[in-house]
Amino acid sequence: MAGAKAEQLPTPMASIVNIRYTVSQPVMAAFMAGGVAGAVSRTVVSPLERLKILYQVQSVGREEYKMSVGKGLMKMWNEEGWRGLMRGNGANCLRIVPYSAVQFGSYNFYKKFAEPAPGEDLSPVRRLLCGAAAGITSVSFTYPLDIVRTRLSIQSASFAVLGDEARKSLPGMWQTMVKMYKTEGGIQALYRGFVPTIAGVAPYVGLNFMTYESVRKYFTPEGDKNPSAVRKLAAGAVSGAVAQTCTYPLDVLRRRFQINTMSGIGYKYKSIWDAVTIIVSQEGFRGLYKGIVPNLLKVAPSMASSWLSFEMTRDFLVSLREDES
Image 1: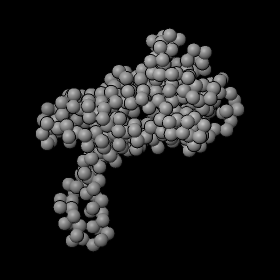
Image 2: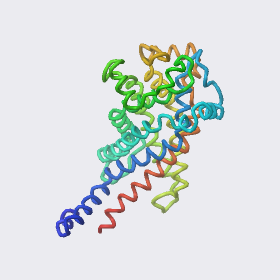
Image 3: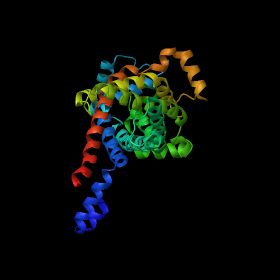
Image 4: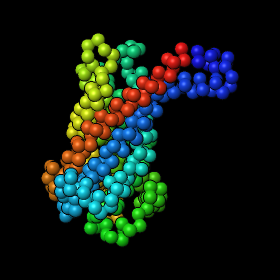
């Protein structure tokens, strides 16, 4: 339909019509809206995200950040200023935009194959499985950026084992990636911790999509098609909190493995089970939940803003096709 209409228009107008038609397709609209949602949500909570990582990578004998969330944020501010609060956010956004875009886009793609009938709602189990598949897809595409973001987040922190000299000349994202590739084992270094990451991301993303769509439906007033913006924010906050709490120990394992070979602070874990055993024996069961307080503080605004900005952007893009008709 759009192609036939475009043929009747001058070339510039035909191009605009074709672009509008392309971006208004459900999967493409979800892909682009997902990128916007990722950038918005991560920037809003960047200081808490970095503090969570600093908590996660600490073990017995490394207690420079063994303090409350407020004191931890003040420590970053006093030692590194505004840049300290946002350290790693550039790499995080470069990672999260394609990551979130692929995640939302692939979820909508997989949904088409999981529908019992065209246009029919999915059951919670089908949403869970589609979300898990979307999580695996997005991580596979963007994992090297995630591991570099982790390194950037901790290399300027005041951990004694890193030394003062290491913090004076901090490499950027590209330099860190090249150094890891050259000195830590090639492409394998950029995918270190990939297995525990997949083990954590698949159930997390699955639970997130399943919970959000279920809560969103519950929050939608009878007779309405969509809930209000406030209700969407609430649904996003609930879905994020549920998914994060259930899968958080796997996120801790991911961070530990990402710095497993890092000079000075590496843990030298041999396997996932070895890591769990060492963490529990040395740090107790609480060691698997290090950093969960700033994580839960960030997850509400993060997921709320992510889902709201996603829906607003997606609805706008989809409306472009309706405007043509």
